[in-house]
Image 1 (spheres, rainbow, N blue to C red):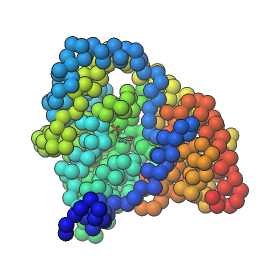
Image 2: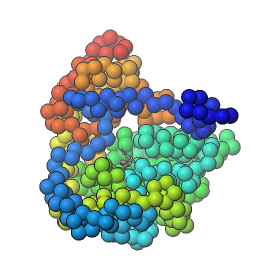
Image 3: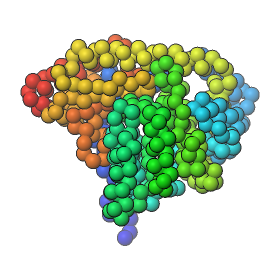
Length: 410
Ligand SMILES: Cc1ncc(COP(=O)(O)O)c(C=O)c1O
């Protein structure tokens, strides 16, 4: 078929793109950008407390002293100095790795994409928590994986459910390829995978020949600074570990990383080179100099307290305004409150009314591939101010209470 600018139709699209579900959530995120909108939608950090003056001086110094390096192409693996910092950060979660085992990426999102590109064949089954990060699932779906959800409880994904799901996939003749898990302050559930279960889940994966995709952007963001041991140290040969500076420092830097099993390292490096050439050098230099100063740890602590306060204000507000029968978990860190409203209230339908009233959240359906989540929603509490949380919470309360009074209709 001859393709011209005028005639590009669905028929011209690659099968994997044509098969992709158009996402309703995009509309929600577009609404979140409107001026004045109170956004509980964006999984974004609050950057108001960053030391912008110090960052500006660092940026000026880097450009003055090393401009031609900072603005040049660089090593595809990332800068050694930044990789050394990454190694120290991972050590806080019990990971022992050398700087030459890490690949710096354009956010962990790019690292997830690399992993899927390297490891997923069409039709492979990837297990993911129910609910799970929409952006992660979209990556796997983009490479035509079949996502199968594993239920969670208060201790994270339930190992017996994973075993059952593996058996069912096998019985159906499909390939069970890997587990995508967010063990800390899970997005969107806010839950931690308990330490005992980390081992158990790893053993199940190993026994069944599954890879583990351990996605951990929130691990150092516990409100009290407690960190849990990563899965990777006990299962280094089957685990891809993904880290990110987006939630701890600033997503605009677009810097994250992957620690793959040694046997896959060259594939990750070569594939990253193909897609990105190299991560941005200037950003890496700026970030690296920020991490050189121990003041960054005090800043992280300040953010932990700030986020705890925002979380507490959100919960106090919801307690006063949400209709009877609404439930939420109480995360001990991270960015998200996962809310379940009484049956019959459809969060996907109501989000439009909330947007009209100036507040936006992500409906639960965005976090499942199986149509569930209509009576659930995710509230991100880090970005809005305390005042916005109170105001936005009050609007949610009015809209949801009215819907409950109507018997759940939007
Ligand atoms: C669980 C999870 N993984 C990965 C990402 C992507 O983060 P990054 O900004 O590092 O690409 C996000 C962002 O929301 C996330 O929540």
